[in-house]
Amino acid sequence: MDSRKALLVFLSIVLMMYLYPLSFVPLFLLSREWSEFREEWKRSALFIGVSIPLYGAKILLGISGWSKTLGLTPLSVSPPVWWAVYLSFTALQTLAVYYIYLVSRNLGEYGKAGGLAMLIAVPLHLLSIKLYFILTWTGLLLFLLGLKKEGR
Image (cartoon, rainbow, N blue to C red; front, side):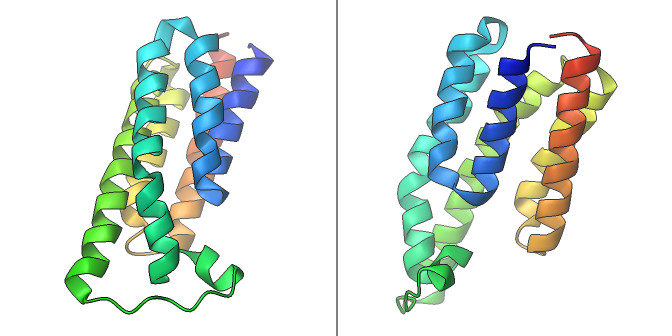
């Protein structure tokens, strides 16, 4: 297993969970490092980049946990605006993870299961943040196990 690729995948997913805008960097580096899946990594990075303004809006609207962490008072907006921001961001994040899933399909059963778990986790974020984190961490570990077993 290429430890540099594994580290970049790990950083991408962990940053996507905790410091979302920064996940763009390891995804972009993966597109340079892992030529076999260059387009998938680039597209994932692209969708992260496009969704960053919506991530900022989520913080300002109090949708993200970062608004509490930063001590921000959420802006008051109509429910349709709130839902539009939330669902648009979730759709773009799902597309970013979809391209990671496309890579995972080439990493054996473990990798494929890991990619699918991460893909399913994003929309389930609407129901439970705990479920999102459990599925994403499980998916990441399975993805890395698949990467190791396939010797990539």
